[in-house]
Length: 84
Image (cartoon, rainbow, N blue to C red; front, top):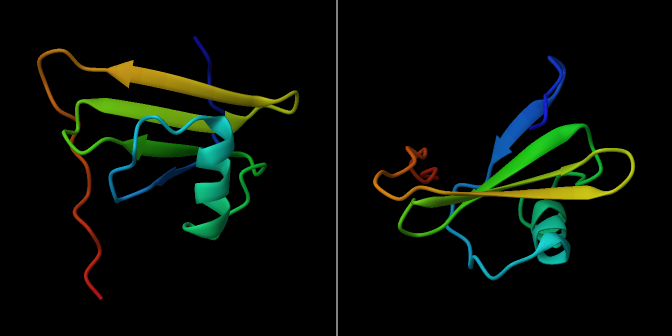
């Protein structure tokens, strides 16, 4: 278990990702697609197309942490894609 501080921001990547992506691929996605710093005090959340799996990526001062949650009977509620 880990605890997030009150000053930690959470960013959602709205588009589904290929869940074979690991730490390096997700860190690049944060930099290039989200235009954010993967080393910032933040948690970056990613979901698959079926919305039954979520990955959380964050840097804890000693390295990256990647957490995977897999729902067996439900789906995550995720914001709709931003319309421009």
